Length: 265
Image (cartoon, rainbow, N blue to C red):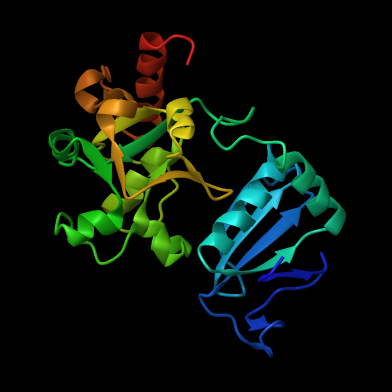
């Protein structure tokens, strides 16, 4: 594969790029590592290379699809990739991946994907009829942020062209981190949630809107809510019963309400 470079599994990747005359890694490169560790699922961030690094465990469900998604996605966005992967594992992943249909959800993928937002943005989204990527919002002068919160994790710059979707508590961790302007993983900190938008992932995939990068699910530029939204849940819809409003409590109570209303999803 052009622009994909392989290193041995025991090779220690550092800030010097062995495929560029040992110059320092720059942002034209990303790194993918496959690990055989039951205690790891997916790790994302900046390592010693100081560029975007992803580690995917062979114990992670759907790892074969994920590594090919990662490679294809980053090649399509003109990145060069250093891969720490056994060639046998890579060929195995390719065989499985070649039989997949991109317009259908895979066995491990959620039928419902969520986007959470800050207070004050819910009404704006409802009025506009769509979710917009960070770059679209910035171009519209809707936000004043200097950079998206994901940049603190080393997210590539073009990630700002996408609306990020997820599941579970991860969406509220993003909201909490935005409010504190730092990456914050304490899910029991009190915060002020905006709303959880629950989307039909099956329809997003069948309409060719669902983008997979191996780690995230996302939609480029804009996501119309009238076609794909299943439910919107805000704190006003929840009875907290004197419970502190935290990422944990809001996620649990919102998801419980959603499942009650959409039995079977």
